[in-house]
Image (cartoon, rainbow over all chains, first blue to last red; front, side):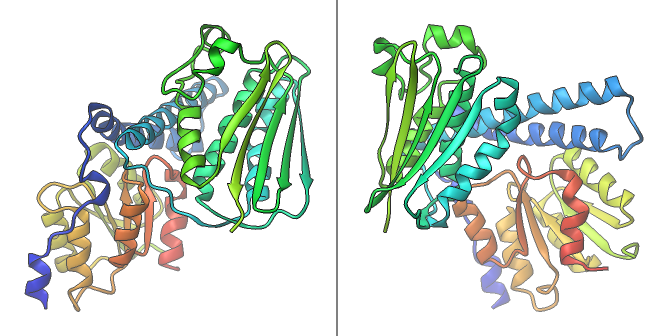
Length: 242
Length: 125
Protein backbone atom coordinates (compact mmCIF):
# COMPACT_ATOMS: atom_id res chain seq x y z
CA UNK A 1 0.00 0.00 0.00
CA UNK A 2 2.71 2.38 1.01
CA UNK A 3 4.79 1.61 -2.10
CA UNK A 4 1.79 2.17 -4.33
CA UNK A 5 1.28 5.51 -2.65
CA UNK A 6 4.82 6.51 -3.44
CA UNK A 7 4.37 5.75 -7.10
CA UNK A 8 1.22 7.82 -7.46
CA UNK A 9 1.62 11.34 -8.73
CA UNK A 10 -0.93 14.01 -7.95
CA UNK A 11 -1.74 16.51 -10.60
CA UNK A 12 -2.24 20.13 -9.67
CA UNK A 13 -5.61 20.57 -11.39
CA UNK A 14 -5.60 24.30 -12.04
CA UNK A 15 -2.03 24.25 -13.40
CA UNK A 16 -2.58 21.54 -16.02
CA UNK A 17 -3.40 23.66 -19.04
CA UNK A 18 -2.00 27.04 -18.20
CA UNK A 19 -0.36 28.23 -21.37
CA UNK A 20 -1.00 31.89 -21.95
CA UNK A 21 1.38 34.59 -20.83
CA UNK A 22 -1.19 36.51 -18.75
CA UNK A 23 -2.02 33.45 -16.73
CA UNK A 24 1.58 32.48 -16.10
CA UNK A 25 2.61 36.00 -15.09
CA UNK A 26 -0.45 36.40 -12.88
CA UNK A 27 0.40 33.22 -11.01
CA UNK A 28 3.99 34.38 -10.58
CA UNK A 29 2.78 37.72 -9.20
CA UNK A 30 0.65 36.13 -6.49
CA UNK A 31 3.53 34.94 -4.31
CA UNK A 32 5.35 38.28 -3.97
CA UNK A 33 1.99 40.02 -3.54
CA UNK A 34 1.10 37.65 -0.71
CA UNK A 35 4.44 38.53 0.91
CA UNK A 36 3.89 42.28 0.55
CA UNK A 37 0.33 42.03 1.91
CA UNK A 38 1.32 39.83 4.86
CA UNK A 39 4.26 42.04 5.72
CA UNK A 40 2.11 45.18 5.74
CA UNK A 41 -0.57 43.43 7.81
CA UNK A 42 2.04 42.56 10.43
CA UNK A 43 3.23 46.19 10.54
CA UNK A 44 -0.34 47.52 10.62
CA UNK A 45 -1.38 45.16 13.44
CA UNK A 46 1.30 46.58 15.73
CA UNK A 47 2.90 43.15 16.13
CA UNK A 48 6.36 44.69 15.75
CA UNK A 49 5.59 47.72 17.90
CA UNK A 50 3.32 50.73 17.54
CA UNK A 51 3.51 52.96 14.47
CA UNK A 52 3.03 56.68 14.64
CA UNK A 53 -0.03 58.15 12.91
CA UNK A 54 1.80 58.98 9.69
CA UNK A 55 3.52 55.58 9.48
CA UNK A 56 0.16 53.88 10.09
CA UNK A 57 -1.42 55.93 7.30
CA UNK A 58 1.35 55.02 4.84
CA UNK A 59 1.09 51.34 5.71
CA UNK A 60 -2.71 51.38 5.28
CA UNK A 61 -2.42 53.15 1.92
CA UNK A 62 0.17 50.65 0.69
CA UNK A 63 -2.01 47.80 1.94
CA UNK A 64 -4.89 49.26 -0.08
CA UNK A 65 -2.70 49.32 -3.19
CA UNK A 66 -1.58 45.72 -2.59
CA UNK A 67 -5.27 44.76 -2.32
CA UNK A 68 -5.97 46.42 -5.68
CA UNK A 69 -3.08 44.53 -7.28
CA UNK A 70 -4.36 41.24 -5.87
CA UNK A 71 -7.84 41.99 -7.30
CA UNK A 72 -6.30 42.84 -10.66
CA UNK A 73 -4.35 39.57 -10.72
CA UNK A 74 -7.52 37.66 -9.79
CA UNK A 75 -9.44 39.37 -12.60
CA UNK A 76 -6.67 38.67 -15.13
CA UNK A 77 -6.66 35.01 -14.14
CA UNK A 78 -10.46 34.82 -14.38
CA UNK A 79 -10.38 36.48 -17.82
CA UNK A 80 -7.71 34.02 -19.00
CA UNK A 81 -9.76 31.09 -17.76
CA UNK A 82 -12.83 32.42 -19.57
CA UNK A 83 -10.83 32.74 -22.80
CA UNK A 84 -9.48 29.20 -22.48
CA UNK A 85 -12.83 27.69 -21.46
CA UNK A 86 -11.37 26.79 -18.08
CA UNK A 87 -13.62 29.08 -16.02
CA UNK A 88 -15.39 26.86 -13.53
CA UNK A 89 -18.31 27.77 -11.29
CA UNK A 90 -19.11 25.78 -8.17
CA UNK A 91 -22.80 26.02 -7.44
CA UNK A 92 -24.16 25.51 -3.96
CA UNK A 93 -27.24 26.66 -2.09
CA UNK A 94 -26.89 30.40 -1.63
CA UNK A 95 -29.06 33.23 -0.33
CA UNK A 96 -28.81 36.01 -2.90
CA UNK A 97 -30.57 38.53 -0.64
CA UNK A 98 -27.83 37.95 1.91
CA UNK A 99 -25.15 38.40 -0.77
CA UNK A 100 -26.73 41.71 -1.80
CA UNK A 101 -26.98 42.86 1.83
CA UNK A 102 -23.33 41.99 2.50
CA UNK A 103 -22.18 43.83 -0.62
CA UNK A 104 -24.17 46.96 0.24
CA UNK A 105 -22.59 46.91 3.69
CA UNK A 106 -19.12 46.37 2.27
CA UNK A 107 -19.43 49.33 -0.12
CA UNK A 108 -21.32 51.51 2.36
CA UNK A 109 -18.41 53.78 3.23
CA UNK A 110 -17.54 54.25 -0.47
CA UNK A 111 -21.17 55.26 -1.16
CA UNK A 112 -21.12 57.58 1.83
CA UNK A 113 -17.91 59.21 0.62
CA UNK A 114 -19.61 59.80 -2.76
CA UNK A 115 -22.74 61.10 -0.99
CA UNK A 116 -24.83 58.39 -2.66
CA UNK A 117 -27.86 56.77 -1.04
CA UNK A 118 -28.54 53.05 -1.61
CA UNK A 119 -31.96 51.48 -1.11
CA UNK A 120 -32.90 47.81 -1.32
CA UNK A 121 -36.38 46.58 -2.25
CA UNK A 122 -37.58 43.01 -2.37
CA UNK A 123 -40.59 41.80 -4.31
CA UNK A 124 -41.84 38.36 -3.25
CA UNK A 125 -39.99 35.73 -1.28
CA UNK A 126 -36.51 35.15 -2.65
CA UNK A 127 -35.69 31.44 -2.37
CA UNK A 128 -32.15 30.06 -2.00
CA UNK A 129 -30.52 29.62 -5.41
CA UNK A 130 -28.07 27.00 -6.67
CA UNK A 131 -25.28 29.38 -7.60
CA UNK A 132 -21.60 29.99 -6.97
CA UNK A 133 -22.18 32.46 -4.14
CA UNK A 134 -18.68 33.93 -4.15
CA UNK A 135 -18.71 34.56 -7.88
CA UNK A 136 -22.25 36.00 -7.93
CA UNK A 137 -21.24 38.26 -5.07
CA UNK A 138 -18.36 39.42 -7.28
CA UNK A 139 -20.93 40.39 -9.95
CA UNK A 140 -23.13 42.27 -7.45
CA UNK A 141 -20.09 44.04 -6.09
CA UNK A 142 -18.91 45.01 -9.58
CA UNK A 143 -22.31 46.41 -10.61
CA UNK A 144 -22.80 48.28 -7.34
CA UNK A 145 -19.23 49.62 -7.33
CA UNK A 146 -19.72 51.00 -10.85
CA UNK A 147 -23.09 52.49 -9.87
CA UNK A 148 -21.43 54.37 -7.01
CA UNK A 149 -18.30 55.30 -8.95
CA UNK A 150 -20.13 56.72 -11.97
CA UNK A 151 -22.91 58.38 -9.99
CA UNK A 152 -23.16 62.08 -9.46
CA UNK A 153 -23.09 63.97 -6.19
CA UNK A 154 -26.12 63.29 -3.96
CA UNK A 155 -27.05 60.43 -6.26
CA UNK A 156 -29.32 57.50 -5.58
CA UNK A 157 -29.05 53.77 -6.24
CA UNK A 158 -32.11 51.55 -6.09
CA UNK A 159 -31.45 47.84 -5.86
CA UNK A 160 -34.36 45.49 -6.40
CA UNK A 161 -34.65 41.74 -6.02
CA UNK A 162 -37.74 40.19 -7.54
CA UNK A 163 -39.08 36.68 -7.60
CA UNK A 164 -40.29 36.18 -11.17
CA UNK A 165 -41.49 32.62 -10.73
CA UNK A 166 -38.83 30.67 -12.58
CA UNK A 167 -36.05 33.17 -11.94
CA UNK A 168 -34.87 35.93 -9.65
CA UNK A 169 -34.31 39.35 -11.17
CA UNK A 170 -31.64 41.61 -9.67
CA UNK A 171 -31.61 45.20 -10.81
CA UNK A 172 -29.51 48.19 -9.85
CA UNK A 173 -30.75 51.60 -10.98
CA UNK A 174 -28.46 54.56 -10.58
CA UNK A 175 -28.75 58.27 -11.22
CA UNK A 176 -25.31 58.45 -12.80
CA UNK A 177 -23.76 59.64 -16.02
CA UNK A 178 -25.37 56.96 -18.19
CA UNK A 179 -23.82 55.09 -21.11
CA UNK A 180 -23.50 56.51 -24.61
CA UNK A 181 -24.94 54.62 -27.59
CA UNK A 182 -21.43 53.98 -28.86
CA UNK A 183 -20.33 52.44 -25.56
CA UNK A 184 -23.46 50.30 -25.24
CA UNK A 185 -22.23 47.94 -27.95
CA UNK A 186 -18.82 47.47 -26.36
CA UNK A 187 -19.43 47.47 -22.64
CA UNK A 188 -19.16 43.70 -22.07
CA UNK A 189 -16.00 43.43 -24.17
CA UNK A 190 -12.77 42.40 -22.48
CA UNK A 191 -10.66 45.41 -21.41
CA UNK A 192 -13.15 47.87 -22.91
CA UNK A 193 -13.36 51.25 -21.19
CA UNK A 194 -14.79 54.33 -22.82
CA UNK A 195 -12.67 57.48 -22.93
CA UNK A 196 -15.29 59.27 -20.78
CA UNK A 197 -15.12 56.57 -18.12
CA UNK A 198 -11.31 56.59 -18.18
CA UNK A 199 -11.33 60.35 -17.57
CA UNK A 200 -13.65 59.89 -14.56
CA UNK A 201 -11.93 56.85 -13.05
CA UNK A 202 -8.57 56.02 -14.64
CA UNK A 203 -7.86 53.01 -12.42
CA UNK A 204 -10.35 50.47 -13.85
CA UNK A 205 -9.37 47.52 -16.03
CA UNK A 206 -12.42 46.89 -18.18
CA UNK A 207 -12.57 43.31 -16.96
CA UNK A 208 -15.39 43.55 -14.41
CA UNK A 209 -18.35 43.30 -16.78
CA UNK A 210 -16.58 40.80 -19.03
CA UNK A 211 -16.16 38.49 -16.04
CA UNK A 212 -19.64 39.28 -14.70
CA UNK A 213 -21.20 38.21 -18.00
CA UNK A 214 -19.35 34.90 -17.88
CA UNK A 215 -20.45 34.27 -14.29
CA UNK A 216 -24.13 35.04 -14.89
CA UNK A 217 -24.38 33.19 -18.22
CA UNK A 218 -22.45 30.27 -16.72
CA UNK A 219 -25.07 30.20 -13.96
CA UNK A 220 -27.88 29.89 -16.50
CA UNK A 221 -28.94 33.54 -16.28
CA UNK A 222 -28.85 36.65 -18.42
CA UNK A 223 -27.24 40.03 -17.86
CA UNK A 224 -27.92 43.38 -19.45
CA UNK A 225 -28.61 47.06 -18.92
CA UNK A 226 -30.77 49.97 -19.95
CA UNK A 227 -29.29 53.41 -20.00
CA UNK A 228 -30.12 56.98 -20.90
CA UNK A 229 -27.01 59.04 -21.33
CA UNK A 230 -26.95 61.78 -18.74
CA UNK A 231 -29.85 60.31 -16.75
CA UNK A 232 -28.66 57.01 -15.35
CA UNK A 233 -28.30 53.29 -15.91
CA UNK A 234 -30.06 50.17 -14.73
CA UNK A 235 -27.97 47.01 -14.75
CA UNK A 236 -29.85 43.77 -14.27
CA UNK A 237 -29.26 40.05 -14.22
CA UNK A 238 -31.43 37.00 -13.81
CA UNK A 239 -30.66 33.69 -12.12
CA UNK A 240 -32.83 30.61 -12.43
CA UNK A 241 -34.90 29.26 -9.55
CA UNK A 242 -34.49 25.46 -9.54
CA UNK B 1 -0.45 27.59 26.74
CA UNK B 2 0.75 26.66 23.29
CA UNK B 3 4.50 27.03 23.87
CA UNK B 4 5.33 23.36 23.40
CA UNK B 5 3.45 22.89 20.15
CA UNK B 6 5.66 22.38 17.11
CA UNK B 7 4.60 23.60 13.66
CA UNK B 8 6.30 22.66 10.40
CA UNK B 9 6.15 25.12 7.52
CA UNK B 10 6.74 23.67 4.05
CA UNK B 11 7.11 26.69 1.78
CA UNK B 12 9.65 27.49 -0.93
CA UNK B 13 9.34 31.29 -0.87
CA UNK B 14 11.84 32.47 1.72
CA UNK B 15 10.13 35.82 2.33
CA UNK B 16 6.80 34.13 3.13
CA UNK B 17 8.60 31.47 5.16
CA UNK B 18 10.15 34.19 7.33
CA UNK B 19 6.84 36.07 7.75
CA UNK B 20 4.85 32.97 8.76
CA UNK B 21 7.65 31.63 10.94
CA UNK B 22 8.25 34.91 12.78
CA UNK B 23 4.52 35.32 13.40
CA UNK B 24 4.17 31.82 14.86
CA UNK B 25 7.33 32.18 16.98
CA UNK B 26 5.95 35.45 18.39
CA UNK B 27 2.83 33.51 19.34
CA UNK B 28 4.92 31.03 21.30
CA UNK B 29 5.08 28.09 18.91
CA UNK B 30 8.21 26.15 17.98
CA UNK B 31 8.67 26.36 14.23
CA UNK B 32 10.53 24.10 11.85
CA UNK B 33 10.91 24.85 8.14
CA UNK B 34 11.39 23.05 4.84
CA UNK B 35 11.70 24.53 1.36
CA UNK B 36 11.05 21.48 -0.81
CA UNK B 37 8.41 18.78 -0.80
CA UNK B 38 10.97 16.03 -0.17
CA UNK B 39 12.59 17.90 2.71
CA UNK B 40 9.17 18.64 4.19
CA UNK B 41 8.06 15.02 4.04
CA UNK B 42 11.34 13.97 5.68
CA UNK B 43 10.81 16.45 8.51
CA UNK B 44 7.23 15.31 9.08
CA UNK B 45 8.54 11.74 9.54
CA UNK B 46 11.52 12.71 11.71
CA UNK B 47 10.15 15.53 13.81
CA UNK B 48 6.47 14.55 14.12
CA UNK B 49 5.20 18.13 14.33
CA UNK B 50 1.80 18.90 15.85
CA UNK B 51 0.71 20.73 12.71
CA UNK B 52 1.97 21.22 9.16
CA UNK B 53 1.38 24.20 6.85
CA UNK B 54 1.94 22.97 3.32
CA UNK B 55 2.35 24.87 0.06
CA UNK B 56 1.35 23.14 -3.21
CA UNK B 57 3.75 24.39 -5.86
CA UNK B 58 7.04 23.13 -4.41
CA UNK B 59 10.33 21.91 -5.85
CA UNK B 60 10.97 18.16 -6.09
CA UNK B 61 7.56 16.99 -4.91
CA UNK B 62 4.35 19.00 -5.07
CA UNK B 63 2.21 19.56 -2.00
CA UNK B 64 -0.52 17.16 -3.08
CA UNK B 65 2.04 14.34 -3.33
CA UNK B 66 3.42 15.24 0.09
CA UNK B 67 -0.09 15.26 1.57
CA UNK B 68 -0.96 11.94 -0.06
CA UNK B 69 2.16 10.34 1.41
CA UNK B 70 1.50 11.77 4.87
CA UNK B 71 -2.09 10.53 4.87
CA UNK B 72 -1.03 7.14 3.49
CA UNK B 73 1.51 6.50 6.24
CA UNK B 74 -0.08 5.12 9.44
CA UNK B 75 2.78 6.57 11.51
CA UNK B 76 2.07 10.18 10.58
CA UNK B 77 -1.40 10.23 9.04
CA UNK B 78 -2.98 11.83 12.12
CA UNK B 79 -0.79 14.93 11.94
CA UNK B 80 -3.08 17.71 10.76
CA UNK B 81 -2.05 19.43 7.54
CA UNK B 82 -3.29 22.87 6.49
CA UNK B 83 -2.71 23.77 2.85
CA UNK B 84 -1.42 27.32 2.43
CA UNK B 85 -1.11 28.10 -1.25
CA UNK B 86 -1.87 30.59 -3.96
CA UNK B 87 -3.91 28.10 -5.95
CA UNK B 88 -7.48 29.05 -5.17
CA UNK B 89 -9.42 27.16 -7.84
CA UNK B 90 -12.20 24.94 -6.53
CA UNK B 91 -10.62 21.97 -8.29
CA UNK B 92 -7.44 22.45 -6.23
CA UNK B 93 -9.38 22.96 -2.99
CA UNK B 94 -11.38 19.78 -3.66
CA UNK B 95 -8.21 17.81 -4.37
CA UNK B 96 -6.59 19.06 -1.16
CA UNK B 97 -9.59 18.41 1.05
CA UNK B 98 -10.22 14.98 -0.54
CA UNK B 99 -6.62 14.05 0.23
CA UNK B 100 -7.26 14.80 3.91
CA UNK B 101 -6.21 18.42 4.53
CA UNK B 102 -7.65 19.94 7.70
CA UNK B 103 -8.09 23.32 6.06
CA UNK B 104 -7.25 25.10 2.80
CA UNK B 105 -6.04 28.70 2.79
CA UNK B 106 -5.25 30.96 -0.15
CA UNK B 107 -2.27 33.18 0.66
CA UNK B 108 -3.53 36.33 -1.06
CA UNK B 109 -7.01 35.99 0.47
CA UNK B 110 -6.26 35.21 4.10
CA UNK B 111 -4.77 37.61 6.62
CA UNK B 112 -1.56 36.59 8.37
CA UNK B 113 -2.95 38.21 11.51
CA UNK B 114 -5.49 35.32 11.61
CA UNK B 115 -2.75 32.67 11.59
CA UNK B 116 -2.78 32.10 15.38
CA UNK B 117 -6.57 31.73 15.32
CA UNK B 118 -6.31 29.11 12.58
CA UNK B 119 -3.69 27.20 14.59
CA UNK B 120 -5.75 27.36 17.80
CA UNK B 121 -8.80 25.99 15.96
CA UNK B 122 -6.83 22.87 15.02
CA UNK B 123 -4.58 22.67 18.08
CA UNK B 124 -6.62 23.77 21.07
CA UNK B 125 -4.42 24.84 24.00
